[in-house]
Length: 300
Image 1 (cartoon, helix red, strand yellow):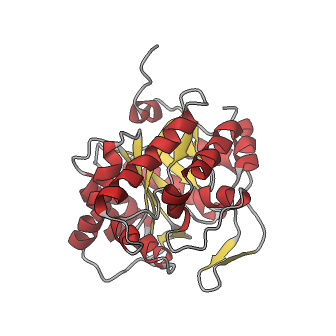
Image 2 (image 1 turned 60 degrees about the vertical axis):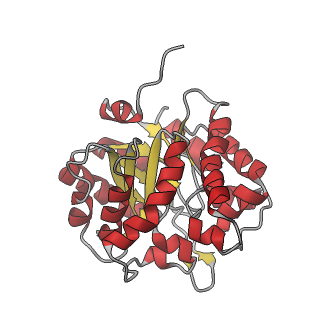
């Protein structure tokens, strides 16, 4: 059996891969309670089989890259539940192993280890604002241990995702240096700026010239914000782009509920692909049926 090409080489060759959709909505559809501050990460300890089942649902839908359930999994978050560092590291590694087991049911399915922003650990909507009052060094120190634990499980890529702030992006990239795993960097945006208000030209420039960054882009945003962001990412970095927006429904962090209707049109992905997107999928409220439609639309 031949060894699969590294993800970075595959993307650089122009290959497009379909990502999965939102893990939390699939887990909710499976009957899981996600009201805990650890969100889906709680299930790494309490119901890992549910996570593997959610990943499997996306493999069956046609996803070629699975994103692990480690977005909100941190040493600090688990410590609040009385879980020690050694066990937390095991759970982080386990998030990659669960996705690997599900990936085995597909053909060449890759695994991206999710590294969410500092604000995700706070569980108060801070990841949609950024500007935590932390220095780049402090944020790098926060992210480094979990990145190291995830890297030990040998994922295909680290997904530094839903990043609201260019300063945090710099911290996450510093923390990932020397991990031995390629990364993609994906901002959550509003219009042509990060959630913290920085122009996307400046935000994407943080990743320019870094060989370990195999893709840059956006996620957890409105579908309407993707096309311009893809063009900007290509213009600033020349790298392949990752794009996985929300369904179009709007999250209210105060009421912790969604409003509005879905606006994710798989046909729009053809425009994103033509502009340079090579990793395309969905984030919150995008489920397996939409991933199947996306795969069909992109003829993958």
